[in-house]
Image (cartoon, rainbow, N blue to C red; front, side, top):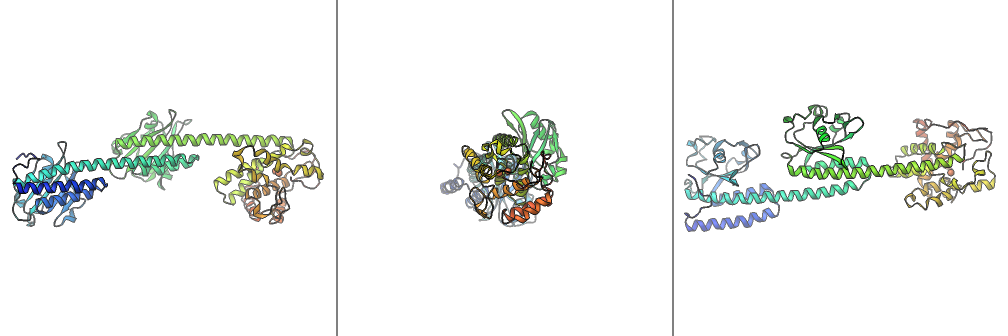
Length: 560
Ligand SMILES: [Fe+2]
Ligand SMILES: [Fe+2]
């Protein structure tokens, strides 16, 4: 029999008032839960409580119809309720299935004789049942059913009207709850997007940007994993730059041609994609899963482009619950734009840094050109410094400062007269004093470049000695910055092993003995130990040495 779900006109006044009170209670109580962001399970359980109270029963179930057209047991009350928790059944099965299919209420006066009843026929605990559909804009979204009235009587037409009216309210509440949850979810996603964006632009290191982007994908898209493929324009192929997890490392050797696979398609056409089921997409390549021993179910892909040029593809793989939506795709595109901006910023910064290093190197080389016998000194000192730093496990940021300090350590020699700098004999006392001015001259030059203020200490104190007998300040031990102590060892080793016009360079082993002898007096013992480890590891003797200068003479060594 068709029923007007809102029509409660034929109910007696007492029941009408009782139902109105429950309805008011539903909106007051559940409305509060929705606003507080209560979970769907909490709201559905509360709806079931109200239903059981209104219908004067103790048993019942609430099902929702999922995307795969199955009815899932969301709430089950009564005997053996736990057995059904989380279970699903086909939308056509049982009384709930019949109600879901027809969209009409259904009363069973004797369940054991009911053709739709799929419970145990001998089970005497279930006598009668009333089930009504939950509707959303004329579409069934679920079913709510109650079993056995507490007074033992069968369900009446009046019960059907009351239950249908409640179901109507429930549908409205659930829709509001869904909208609220969706809105809340979006707000959280955009707030995460904002956080992630700030995190991405807070570094200028491209590899850090890539790794942060990968970590953000799982958090932002609620995905199991993610990957970033970059485009090699010369080879016209994509390669996995970052793929999260231990399994991701196996993808490092995988490459895709433009147009090949899902990522290749995105790179070719520059359009984002949602794949709800990869097994149904011809573009999907199972060999990548085989190699990584990972099972891809669904994915979302977006091109990463800078000023209209595609530089790669981002993928979020396997949504933790359900599949990716169009809303997810919009968010993923925004995220992809943020990654592109952060990568471009980092690339520009690295280009500027490289140019700066090259300019500094060229400057150091120009100074060396004035002294034809020390060619390649700066490059060798830099290589020795980096080898020492490697054995001192120096952090990356300090390493950058060491690198520039080593390149520019003798920049002050620009202010030393040619006749002293190019002299092919040992310096006299006046000349040596003049030459010893070069660290301070260097500091004077660099002080005009604020960006190089961190470089000054390493350069200014590279002729200090740990016993306090060095210059310009006569600093001792830790008073001398570590970078300066490192340059000191590297610089002296190179000076000892380089042939000068007035003396032949020492063989490496002899210079090494000299370093050991002076360890703890002239040089920092830890730095010398690191140098020795680097030497034994073959990191020192591999450095290219310039052919010896002219007219070597046997005189005392000079290292200024
Ligand atoms: Fe020097
Ligand atoms: Fe030097």
